Amino acid sequence: MSLQSSPSTPLTAPIAVLDSGVGGLTVVKALRTLLPAEDILYFGDTARVPYGNKSEPTVTAFVRQIISYLVPRQPKHLVIACNTATALALPILKREFPQLTITGVVDPGARAAAQAAGSKLTPLIGVIATEATVRCGAYNRAIHRRRSKARVIQRAAPLLVPIIEEGREESDLLVQLALQQYLEPLIAHQPDVLVLGCTHYPIFKRSIAELMGPACRVIDSAEQCAQDVARRLREAGLLRTGSLGAGLAARFTGLGGAGGSLQCLVTDDSPRFQMLAERFLEVPMAAPTLVDLSQQSPPPAPLPLRQAG
Ligand code: DGL
Image (cartoon, rainbow, N blue to C red):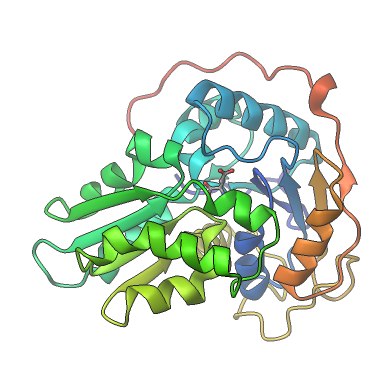
């Protein structure tokens, strides 16, 4: 679905980006490079991370609550920068919040993987993701919609999110061991493409690409998601002046100014969030704002299901 420009969607409204924790910052980083003039409102559900070991109703309820909280901020676009939440809850949440344009991570990642597989008739596409994303088969379906003959192998890597949220460096032995354990069964099959089907994983992209070897294309679902958002906003005429033309001078102060601002909201005031965000985005950041979702009223009743689209 494409975005609609309307008088109630000012160009200056922020782009809202949400995830269970710091993972969605990989999308923020890519968005800032592509669209340096845009203001970004980031929501990290740090009190309830990880989502990847939880059920569909639970993840849907968490994200519903976050979106209800963000609605009054009138974002011009909302990105579910979490594969787990996209895989489990995107269709229902799009119906429940028709006043917002909402997109996710799975389709852009699957599209890029299908393209990267090149001209092979039956390419082998690997996917690493959370347990919930693997279990619900969203990547399988999204890849097969584009490449019906592709062979897809999925592998859950449940320890990676807690390891990343703990702030372990890429060179840490535990990180290297976990990556080897999770990737070796995939490497044995020599996939043509590997999709990083969790927005936390690009934080270890260099090591993952090294382990997979040069014959395997590694697809970063976060980067693909940001490109998808940039394209949609451009097509809808919703980009701020200066947003176009790949961000050579992306300013990232968190305080506004010539570059767009970044405001971070979190549900648990862990000092780790700011430390990790600064390390990852490579800029000093304003402290995140603590949000209490317990008072959040439920969203309006869902609209009836529509056919197609
Ligand atoms: N970064 C998220 C994803 O893309 C969430 C991981 C988690 O919370 O388990 O799936």
